[in-house]
Length: 356
Image (cartoon, rainbow, N blue to C red; front, side, top):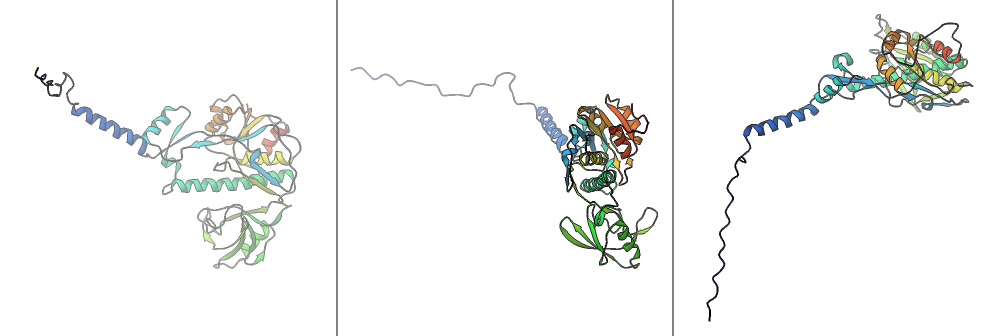
């Protein structure tokens, strides 16, 4: 009988010796990696006192205007409002670098954008307020050109704007309709102004107003808040419109769309077609009586209009040289009033030659 075979012998498993050149990572590499991660994190999270400014989106104003109580007429082309795209928050170091490297974008210091003590939220509120006021001014301008406004009007007095620092600021808003002052019904702007002037000095003046469909009562006092030290309530009034005109702001703030809104309202309310199938762009603050005032960022708005394929660009006369320096291929037309812009589109320019 043969003895069993010896058990198979297996050498114990030992760790392999370290390979040459594969020792522990040097400490300086770990430190460098940590610094890079920290720098990358800081480049996207730290906020600096700068904003970016560049060409913004354009919007055809015609679909944004909604008119009730009057026949409207379609247009075959477009009337474009132009905008400046502003960063919604302060720039990070990485975004600041990107803005500096982009030839179409400018870097704006916070001190050039916000007044001391003002927050970004307050600036945005002011921009929305200016847009509301500009829509009223555009409507007043267009209705004056189309019909018998302001003589033809609905009852009450319409708040066009309020003056910063006066008691009306933050209590009355553009679009509010004043129906009574100190319990007396008012029919128009003149009667409302007379009621304010006749109110006893030193006592609050009670305004009854419609804010949308809600009636509110506001007590206001005269204070020394005018630009020359006048004692004022601080409200600017116009006559209430005889028809309902609502304008969608398309998320845009500021007053510079006023000229294009006024042209759009006029085009919709009159037979014919101001655009004649063209893409027409422009910018300009408009007053309730049709004067066109300068705006900021005109070079960016020129670039936005040209990118949109505009053939004509209306620009406030005081902004014309800056717009011309952008060397656009489209026709620049400097204007001082709504009537001048309308005359260019209707062919009635009074024999004057405008633009390039």
